Image 1 (cartoon, rainbow, N blue to C red):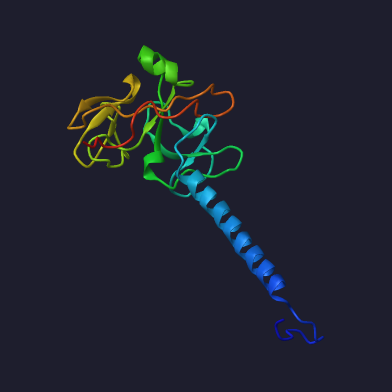
Image 2: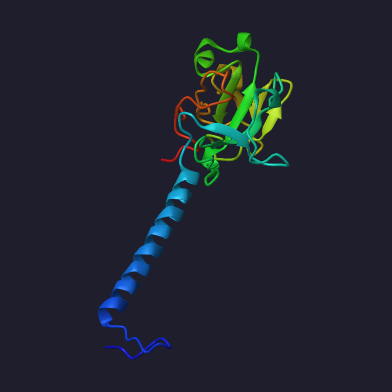
Length: 196
């Protein structure tokens, strides 16, 4: 028996103390599991059904609508968001997406199959050194990496048109636009720089 701990003279036995300690430890562990699961959701790659939110600025975290994307570019940087839990998958820059709205008639046949209403989505991480694809080359209507001047054609599955990038940007297929801009699956290729 342990000495009295309360003002009423009740005594706690070791079994009661151990049960309480185990209960507290288990509770703390389960809380940590929930935190880890939320962290995993934030770093998880885009999935079918994900919506897109503004990555930065005054509207950061708000859902992007079709009318938020100017026809003919430039791109809007975005992060995917789980539509049920509302968790924004911004825990990894590899999840950053470039959304661009183009004239559907200007898209290559291969690009059109993964686009929705002229909107295309690509990884916003350069395949050369992993820099952000945050610029738009207005004259050529291409995505531009400021680090080493690689340019990608969004109308042709982000084909490399200039610079040292070794491969095109992975595309993110989109679903029908009637429900908003929604991912129809994951990236079509490896995101980021090539490692050997």
